[in-house]
Length: 149
Image 1 (cartoon, rainbow, N blue to C red):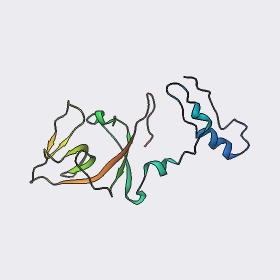
Image 2 (cartoon, rainbow, N blue to C red; image 1 turned 90 degrees about the horizontal axis):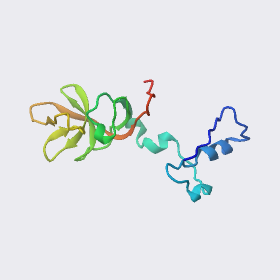
Image 3 (cartoon, one colour; image 1 turned 45 degrees about the horizontal axis):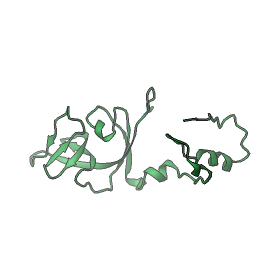
Image 4 (cartoon, rainbow, N blue to C red; image 1 turned 135 degrees about the vertical axis):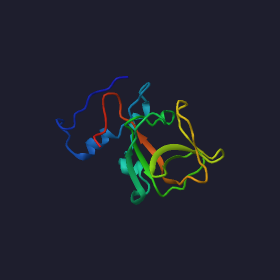
């Protein structure tokens, strides 16, 4: 894969449309596509990732219990509190006041980790469990990078 470095700060773009044209190109991770000549505009991250702004919160993941869902230690989670959780949803659960991210397994009445090294959490009637929101997206930093929050 060939990548041409682009520094927007020191480039001689004549308009913001030129910058947006460059930034809207898809980057081939295999062979370059002949369709690159027909680029489309890319919406903002807010438009792509946040459907209900008033009900959306961001949180930083900690630990390795959800790695098979792509949630790594340090990932930024986008959590929508307006979505009703369904079976197999990745949720933020409050168990007796402690927050955890797990997979909701309604059939077996458990909160399931996405890592076989961790045990599931049963959902008995006598423990106060609340769904605080559904994880809609996870943004994971690449090697040697981390979010500052």
